[in-house]
Image (cartoon, rainbow, N blue to C red):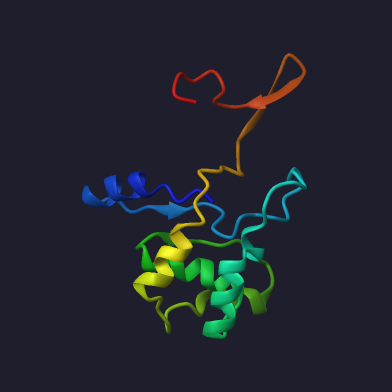
Length: 130
């Protein structure tokens, strides 16, 4: 939900590699708002998973790989670790990439928090560009 296309293009144009933090959406994090959408359950992701015979996680990882974004998904389950690496033997058409690109909502899920005066606030709340 946070594609950051401009940032990625800027970095890649300057020879900088970009790494996706939490590329599967971290829907299992303890502080997740129950109203937040779940990336792994998006209809577009599910449809492409069925079409390609892949898991939703593989669809999301392949999308990042095809955008030349490094992915390091967290997993402690051997079967999921193996599944996550199996994204190099299929590709998406330009139309499929556009469908996945359209999921961007400029929505950041992983917001570093601090406790200030007993209240939880975003770490960067005081930054002028926040």
